[in-house]
Structure formats: structure tokens, C-alpha cells
Amino acid sequence: MQLRNLQIPAGAVFAPMAGLTDAACRHLMADHGAAWTVSEMASAKALTFGDRKSLELLQDKHPHGLYAIQLFGAEPETLEKAILFVREKGVRFDMLDINMGCPAPKITGGGAGSRLLLDPPLCGQMVAAARRALGEDTPLTVKIRIGWDADHLTGAEVAKQVEANGADLIAVHGRTREQMYIPPIDTAAIAAVKQAVSIPVLANGDVTTADGALTLLKETGCDGVMIGRGALGDPWLFEQVRAAILGEERPPEPTLNQRMSTLRAQIYEMCEEKGEWAAMPQARSQAMHYMKGLRGAAALRRYCSMLEHFTDVDTLIDAVYKLQ
Image (cartoon, one colour):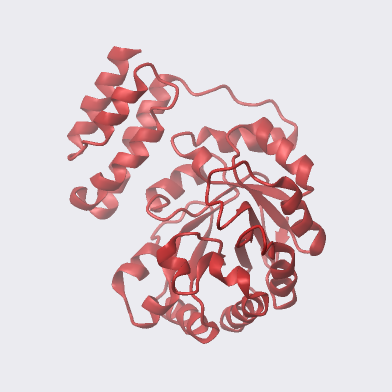
């Protein structure tokens, strides 16, 4: 896949997730074959006010592979100013993504995220503003859902608007905002978005295996897949999906030692990046995902919720080995 000046490698894309896709998590997924990774979302309005925490969400001193930053907002002029501010501050990124899919009430309440799906022309205006700020060389992507609710399945209409105004790729989560994350994704609705535009479209939602990725591609006709929660605690999924897409022999499943070593390395990098005090509360949810499928997983997840210091990670790993 070619997006403007970028040649995109084969493989699935790692989706942005607030509170989860920090630099350590992105680096891990990129090292295991993600085609590109995306930052946690940052507020365009907060950036225009010079908010330090919002800027820090986007900064990555040493990106691994192709790296996109994601912004959210509901005002085209503010988005344009935010992009110019980010560039002025020297934030390095290969692509920019606009969030039009987040279902969280604190985001939609301000008119941003999936709330934008109720106003397709405004979606187009947001993309046009971002394109003005980016210029012609930087790829611009948009993350959407299939609609706001069953009565407002506007995904295809939004897709046409963003394509017409300069978007290079669309990622579609196969649920409405009303559905949040609960029912199975609607592959037919994703396919409708794909059929509405000529730019590449990524299908997103419920991919936890390489075979699942291939099935989603077949059912939607999309150009690729975006994986989020399915890869947490399982970065090897990207290697599996890449091999499946290329028709190559799939690598073996990771051993328990590999899983625990990777868990430890990820949390160590989090502590190095943010400091132990800030990193460990976030590390708890990351660690829980590594417990999937293990004997005694419920008890181990409870232990994960109590991690306070990096040394606790070794105690957790010891408990994992004892229970297997």
C-alpha cells in the first residue's frame, strides 16, 4: 500500500487506545510486525492552549516503524491550529489520524469523536482543515464507526466526505456509537463503507487471530485490518497476521518464558519513559492482558490490579510459573 510519500509494509495496523497505546506499547507492537502504530488521542483544543500533557501523549523520541499521531476535536480551525502547533514543537510523526470514532461520553459530549458522524459535512471540513495544515506530503487518515446508532448509519456518507476533502485512508470500527464494544461487528456495514470510496479502507473490530483477520478481509473487501485490544498481551498476533496475509508459514506461538519476558520488558520501558509512579498504575491493565489463557488467570489478574512497584512484576511472574 502506498499513502502519498509512504510505502506501507504488509501487516495489520495497531489501533489507538486511550490509556493503553503509550510509547512502550507501540514499540512492542511495531517490533512484532505492526504496519504502523498510532498514538493515544490528544485534544486539538488543549494543544492550542499549550497543554503539556496533551503534547506528551504525542511525543515519541525514538519511534519504532511508521508512527501516526491522533487528534480529536469538533472545530476545523482549532484542528488546523493544533497541527501547526505540534509541528512547531518538533513532534515527529509519519501520518496524522483524526478521531471520529471514540464513543466515550466525555469526548462525544463536546461534539468530537463519534459525535461527528451525525454531521458528515463537518467531517469533511475537519479533514480539509487538517490537509491545509499538513500540506501535500503527509498522509492523513480518519478513524470512524459505522454510525451513531441504528437510525444514523452514516459511515458511508462520512467516508465520501472525508475522501473528497483529502483523506488518504479510512479505518472503520464495525459498531455504532450506541453499541459501544458489546455486540459482534457488522461486517456488511464495513463493506458498505469500503464500496463507497476509492481510497484504502481498514476493517477494525474483534480480530484476535490471524484466521479472524483473513475472514474479516474476505467479508468486507477491505484493504487491511486494524487490531486493538486483541493484540494487548499478544504482540505476536501481528507476526501471525502478517504471515497469513503474505501466505507465508506462520511463526510458532510464544512460549511462557517469552510471554513473561515481554511483559517485564514492556513495563520496564514504561517506567523508564514515565517514571515508576506514573507507569505502574497503567501497567496493571497491560499486565492483565498477558494472563489470558493461563492456569489461575482470575487470581493472577487480581494480583495485577495491585502492582505498585516494578519489583512487584517479578513477584507476579514467579506466581505465574508456580501456577502453570
